[in-house]
Length: 550
Image (cartoon, rainbow, N blue to C red; front, side, top):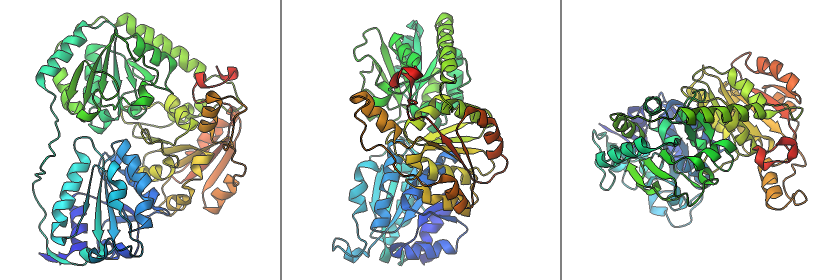
């Protein structure tokens, strides 16, 4: 079948079950947009290309599939970069299409020419500059496969305009054979047996989970393993929704902004079983570097991450689901009753303090209350800053309640567009996006996208007129007299802004208004902006704040 290459690209998307694409058109992708116009694929026009990548990420994470976004050459492509890097750091599968100037003009500094392959090389899983249109079906097939297997991540395909206009004989490959790309899914049986033996010899074991558990669809296997071994669970920021937060085995978040008692727990444990986590600096910040009492088993699909930051006693390279299934074949006879009781007592005491009234409006209490209104399948999308940590501590995630955030790159502005993508993926589910007044203003132009496509996200703005996390870092690095460059001296009137976009809004400043506000935001399935006035001295976690919040 002979068709135009642009039409072939769209056919490839259809075969890969892509039903929504986020993008912003331009001259270098005109043939592709003409082909899209004649297809059944829904195109969502964003207001800034960075939002296209974040929306594709949110859409894909909501459905556990690969998201797709498109931008034109030059500034269109470079505007995608932060979104691509965000997805790469959090192992989110994306296929990113960029237009390029005509192939015979590349390298001659043409209008809107940029070397997007070179610019994104360090944070794409793979990338292609397609100069032969006949290669497009194979390239797109490989891109979807690479993005969604092994350690997942973004793959970029740069397609010159003249290539899109060629006519090709369309044949979509049935099989994949990529030299040098063979992810290991099954953990080595000897290493798995060694891990099982070490678990049986432990007295105070702890399981630490990351985003690889949900990404690998291993939640059920993890739950079975935890119940069989009776081991408490802590998590990284990306692993919050990989295990039921209401489970008696769940302790909480660890790391620089984790639960203090959970950090203490991992230092007390004699065995740490890390599953699907990079175990990066923010997660391990509070761990003792030379803890000779402790052994570490690290299970991850990416061998490059194992032992990178902490010495590992037993490395197991493999998919979380497959490796947990292998571990479940063994018998475990651990006596952890006292250990578990101690963990739950500490968690209960911590949460009691977390939700106590110490300010006019306690953002953690509000998040927790909203969380209780969100049924299974709901999605919370947290931005970056102190608001991210409040949400991470207070939203009750797990099972089918998802918690999306930018964990690795820490991208401010992520939550607004990502939540729109998630809502378009799950239109009947509750989707809430929380952010600070700084993060909200980074990509707020896409409120128009939410309104245009009736994406009923509930946007919560915690307004403290500051860049709260940077302010907190300055205070802890120097002192309270060192604040600089963190005051948002002018903010728009967020309620008038909501009105300008045709979106309902409400402003609250006290805990007593929370119940009524929650009733209002969930009255219908339309977008809603809830502005919350909060004290700038409320810290991310108690040990980062002053005595008023200890």
